Length: 133
Image 1 (cartoon, rainbow, N blue to C red):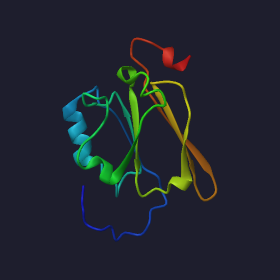
Image 2: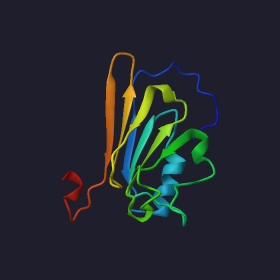
Image 3: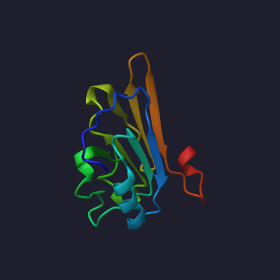
Image 4: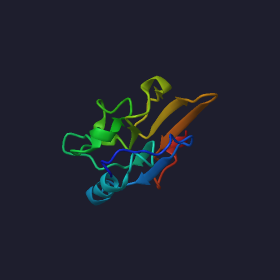
């Protein structure tokens, strides 16, 4: 990630990084190095690497990103399979969390100039289809 100011004109597009980390600390470190907030607005992560207190953290993560957890994260943190990172520069007046009672599904709604867009982050285990029921 670059700490130099971005002198490019504002983008009209909306870019999403999506990745299943398989709970790997190496994959998490790769994301922290590669997920450029000048290039991406949102990151939908499945099977995130979490620290011993079940949080996704790193020293530079919260500088650029808001980390969102499923609504039941604090009641069943060991079952959580998804997180969403939202670029801090996106106005919180233009997006909100859609409440879903699942540790495998999260959703956000973004309000743009003339439309609304919903983004879903879904983890579906390979050996089950219970997420879709």
